[in-house]
Image 1 (cartoon, rainbow, N blue to C red):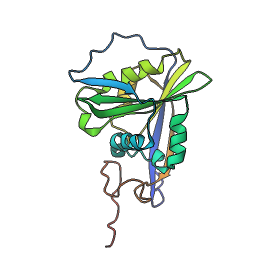
Image 2 (cartoon, rainbow, N blue to C red; image 1 turned 90 degrees about the vertical axis):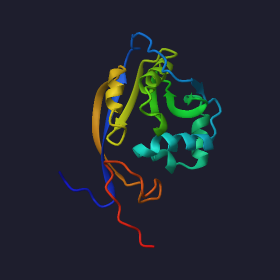
Image 3 (spheres, helix red, strand yellow; image 1 turned 90 degrees about the horizontal axis):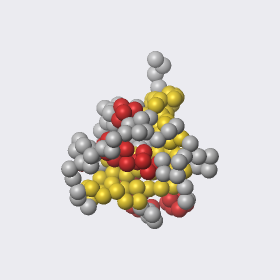
Image 4 (tube, one colour; image 1 turned 180 degrees about the vertical axis):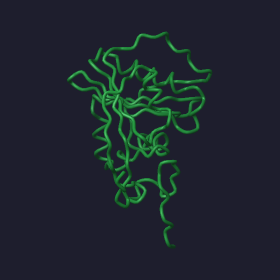
Length: 198
């Protein structure tokens, strides 16, 4: 294996798809007070909150590079749908869909905030995202996951009906070094950073 240049991180991106809506017995709702609502006029500030709360532990950083104007324009697009899971009236997770004119639906982002992982919400929430994606009878629903995602993410996608169709290796600049993510972010695959002189 070739050593990476300083400041670079290696990742493997896995792409998954389903070309027909899965047939399954409806999963029982978790024993919790839950509500799944579409954020029809999602604000930039609320999106930033969701993206950080759900994604920061898994090194989500791409949308943090966007300007507020670019993000506002993205959220205003009619093909973008944001859905928020509330548990006991607290935002517990979200997913984002993008519908294309060609009939594809991408599950762009999906996840739970750390306080709500391990409560039995994951499969039910993902099935709800899949059912929502299939509204309107698209040709295909697809998603990608990566090395830095939750270690059970890939298996959960597969158990819920997605099939792997491609993998690719990528390198990217460590977002901690650019100030996009906290320097002290803990993740088992992140190398330690040198101490900053005060």
